[in-house]
Structure formats: C-alpha cells, structure tokens
View 1 (cartoon, one colour):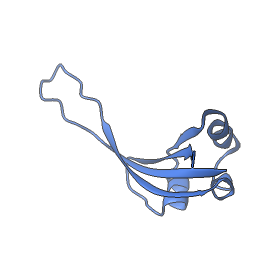
View 2: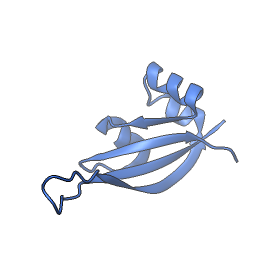
View 3: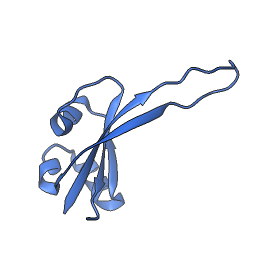
Length: 85
C-alpha cells in the first residue's frame, strides 16, 4: 500500500469589512508517494488507524512534519492520503 504526502502551509486572510470573517486557506505541495511502512514508523497508533480507516489523515506535529517532508515552517501540516495508483 502506498501513501501520498502533501505538505501544506496555512495562510490567514485579513477581513476587508470588520464584521465579516474570511477563513484561512492552505497551499499544498505534493511531496512524494511512499510505502506505508515509511510513514508507519512516524505516526502514532491513532493517526495510523485513522489513515487506514478513512484513507487520509492530517498531521500537525512539527517533528512528524519535518521527518516526512524535510520542511519545518510555522502554520504547516502534512496530509497523508492512501494512493489509488
């Protein structure tokens, strides 16, 4: 089983009108596709279970992000998705 790793950075957006909330947005980069065993060692049992049951998981732990993507940026996360190819 293979897993696609996306590295995402969340950006805030200022409100033009004070009463209106503008949701933050994320810009994601496709990092690579790896074997499940590669990510298995970096994830907690709960995160791995969620990946296997739902087909995807979002990870915000900075250490795991750096281990799997090689990047360390504030307001970032990685999204792991079971690859269909």
